[in-house]
Length: 178
Image (cartoon, rainbow, N blue to C red):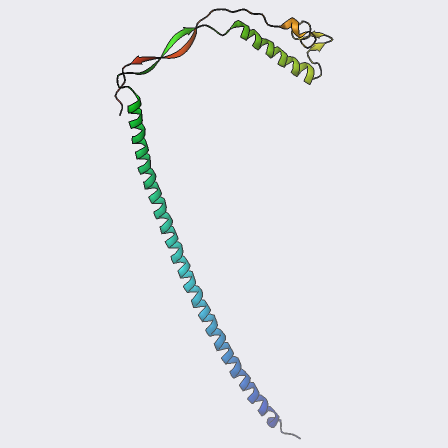
């Protein structure tokens, strides 16, 4: 009968060698993970610094643009005031006054009414299937349909006088410009 201890001894030695290799492998992997963790932390710190630099740069650019716009706006306002002062006669300026004017021609008013009637006829009679039309008569006007006899409804030439107000310019002393 063979000795059981003699068969186990080589297995124990092999198991010990395998555990030492496993320990070395585990130590190497742990070192690599630690190195990668340190590299990730360094990269995160670098990203944070770069973001801060971008924010500082963008803020400086925005402040510079605002300062430049304020400066350009001031220059433009000064140039506009100077141009206005050159164009305006210091002794006179414009004032709005009312002056009577003849009214629009009555003929034009009748043309407008005629055009309005035609639009209503087109909408009510043509587009909506003859809503205002009863045979050849217009229910709305009580006369012959405009579409049947357009010459019968031609506007007449009349005119009436009335007062209309228009704006004109008159010379008045100017006020002091800022």
